[in-house]
Image (cartoon, rainbow, N blue to C red; front, side, top):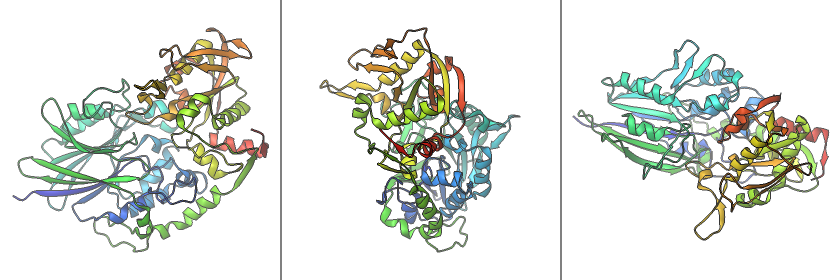
Length: 516
């Protein structure tokens, strides 16, 4: 019998990027789904799949949540891009379950997320078996990192349980055995080990992709979450089973095209191509047919320009004035010498919280603040949906937290100061380095890890282990995320349930001209 063929187009972590812009400026960038879909050729034996994190992450997605307050726009775009299946990402919970439900209700694709259950333990988005027109039986299982439970606000998880993704994938796979020709796992998570050597890179269970390849027998593992570009490759388990894995960059900077052949003897052949987004194609993007439906030929770029123009107008709104621009420099320079960007954000956190100390991490990519501050500056510098928490913290735990940040530094083989691989691999995590304000401190990177805070004073006096202070930080860090377990020992003095972006804007409303 002839081989049965399946073609897959796969994206993940698009974070609201549809147009070829990062919203920091007006220069077109090689990002966004409209810069990808012109190359998609969908026939009846093609699946378009997304790995989650669509609803949050950039100015467009922030705008849709805060102004029209509707996720239908995002679902409509994903429909026009031809998506058949998708799983949920951790950021798809950020704006609450009702917002997520509106997205799912309007999405024509099928949501598969095996480890999201209701309170009674029922699967809300179970696996599916898709029988392609050529007869190929495809098992499709979705899972999301269970670190959703660590990061997400509790009110956004009322009525659902996010349980162990590995166990649920294992159960689903056992049920699929004998019923399918090929089994695919869409995993909003990544890899905890080096793909070449198998060396474990972290003790965290946030990502278990390598374990899935080693212990389960999926044919294809489509990964995401880490925003890491992984070319298609096989990972062979100890029993000899081969799982084909890929992972695309975030923001639709690229996508993977997979071509699969399966024969009657359960032999699976997979090849793939990683294709970069090209902003020159964005204006030619047309709706991608789903199941050969008749679709509108209007370019997607034009179809949704009404919303994009609204976003741009909103971003250009003036917010306030600084005495000078606060612009980013090299990551290492900012971490070692400090940056006025973090100083200003900490200043705002201290202002609204009344805390004695403040801590903030900066996103991997930030625009900074121009002298004339607009909404664009704020969104492009603080892209997170975070709120604030004030902890009662001991001097001992404060120092432990600062020591964790000080792990950011390392020395290369030439003795030159650099950034530790722990913050670069398997995922780039500059945002896990925190800048502190309200205390006077000094880091000596030449000292051993755990002994690098060589000075820590509050109001001119050394901070003692038992001394109690109040510390303001965002809810993400307050959960202990980023390997800050000491925060779990702290008691909460206050919570400010207003997004930090709103607080930054409010600060300028109160102080239209700010000296920095």
